[in-house]
Length: 297
Image (cartoon, rainbow, N blue to C red):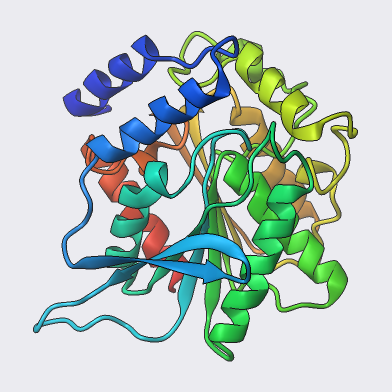
């Protein structure tokens, strides 16, 4: 059963639900504000960096006298927000707890967003940052984590670098992934009453804005339509109370059928991208810890 803190937070999310009629600047400001209200983990440092031409920041564990940080490996974080909102400001708390729990630095990139920069800008930036990161840390384990649209972007990145022959992520973890921008999933309507974050009008608006006329079935826009064979280990985390439930479940099924080593993680009573809200309720902190453990195992 979810904690009282979770229920209180979910009520506040539902009350501030985004509306596609809001100007994108207001949507972005509201999402970034949420990030400033959540606490950073202790013993982390935040440093701005140019990641292959992409603005980014390192969120790094500084360690303690008792437990120094692990200097080997890194994690690339691709934030959610429908390819239209979100960035380092919204995801810095999540990145900090991920870094602290994993003992590895987390690179959070500020990829270009729609409507100013529709597809393929986000994928181009993710690819440039990935190439920069792997060049910076040759021979080290480098994993990718993404939530919502960032989860779809993480998979599109994996499919793209596989095709180009570049180094694949050692592991990829996607939380509440948005992998089908056709918005045809039955859960979008079936679970509308229990999702405090997303709803059909919002994700259809974001899909159209990001695609800018490109087909929703393009496998680099909707990785559910991609050939997933040959990708590395994949963790798919899905909340039972989210409209993108079917995206996650179908991804688990299709990746498994393609021979991918899939770890399925379904939390029946939790909402969209719950680990991102670390510091708001205990389930989020536990979720970030579980992600960190899997990404570094």
